[in-house]
Image 1 (cartoon, rainbow, N blue to C red):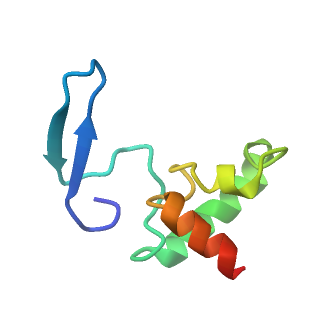
Image 2 (cartoon, helix red, strand yellow; image 1 turned 180 degrees about the vertical axis):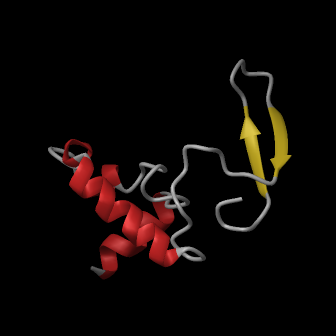
Length: 85
C-alpha cells in the first residue's frame, strides 16, 4: 500500500453497508506524506506545475481533501495543519 499499512474501508454504495479490508489505499491516491515524504512533496510540486487549475479558485482546505494530492489528510489533520501554519 501507499503508506505500508493495511486499510479498513467502509463501503456503502447501495446502502447495504459492508467492510472491506485490503492492503491497498487505491490506485488514485497520492504518496503517503509520512512514509514517503520526499515522493509526496515532489508529487504535489509536480501537480502544481503541470496542472495549476486544480489549485485555482479553491480554498486550501478543499484542496487538502484531494486524496490524489494529500493522501490520508482528512478533517482532523487538515484543521491541525492549517491551525499551525
